[in-house]
Image 1 (tube, one colour):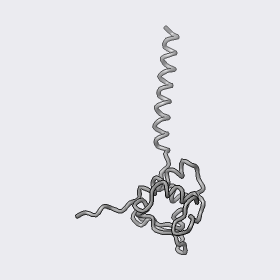
Image 2 (cartoon, rainbow, N blue to C red; image 1 turned 180 degrees about the vertical axis):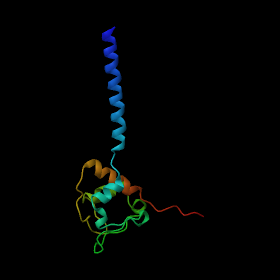
Image 3 (cartoon, one colour; image 1 turned 90 degrees about the vertical axis):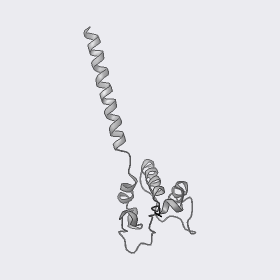
Image 4 (tube, rainbow, N blue to C red; image 1 turned 45 degrees about the vertical axis):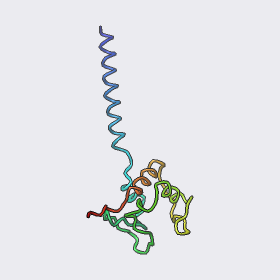
Length: 119
């Protein structure tokens, strides 16, 4: 009987730890907007629709408020990796971050679209 209680206790503790790990994993998923500012993408680019201003006034990067309307997620990823050109130019700065951060940033950028016009 004592062995049974020990086995059940170990099982319960293991389940609690597994469930706790799932919730922290979900909370630590990278946030594209945070990555955009943390990696200083806003040195050159603004996202006026979200109130993100360019921090370097001399930079010539474009406003990305509607980038998802204009470019696909696949193109954005290739462009940021300098595998594609836009207006005959490659992206100016190589992304310095993890693959997970890169994917989150690309997905977030692709989601930036113009507000639908109300009629």
